[in-house]
Image 1 (cartoon, rainbow over the protein chains, first blue to last red):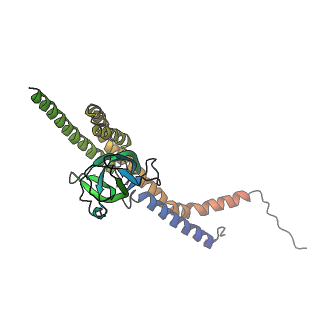
Image 2 (image 1 turned 90 degrees about the vertical axis):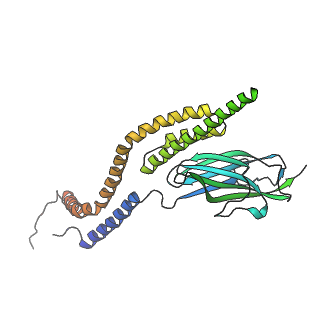
Image 3 (image 1 turned 180 degrees about the horizontal axis):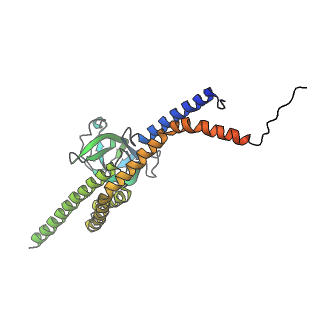
Length: 164
Length: 133
């Protein structure tokens, strides 16, 4: 006597095969498929929104720097702050040629973020242009070369410099 | 004399800073190595993050204390890394093997279970035959 219908049994079996293959693939796949880092420049309340539009020469501007790590291991991240003219912005492959005004170094664990309030100084020796860009670049310490490597991540904020 | 003293102090501060940096990088490198193997290094990473803050603020004494704590943790983790990795791999591949064996279990056990339940639900049935009138 055939109690269990053969077609029903075949469908149940097919579902179990597909389900088990998908589940085991999700268990065996590497934790990080596409490694990436992220960099953000936020306002003084660590939110997107109330960015300063004007800064004083020789003064300071309070902002918030955000770094996220998703590369699979803890990274040693360095955010380099520079003040540049609008034409000297970095690209995704090359950093800005302007000199570093301030460094912010932090260790960021995998799948973790670092949010840090920073006071960025506006140096007295600025280009004569009225409008400048406050640039932050993300550099990551490379253990193989033993040196800092530009990650290609950067943010900028245009501000008007008030010379009092 | 005073200049010499200042230079001496400056030199010792600079060399201490250099030592701290190189020691920090060595500890960081060992942490990454363990992390890539799959060893949980969260506690060490927190200590290293505090160490960087101390180095950045120039508090080398605190940085050195934190680094000796990191060193202690790392030594324990490095000693146990082999066992931790083996256990993790066993759990991972064991789970995958268990999941892959589900269709086989379904193929072997489902018909038996179904028949068992089928008979269990009908065990009190009484079979009678009716004579045609």
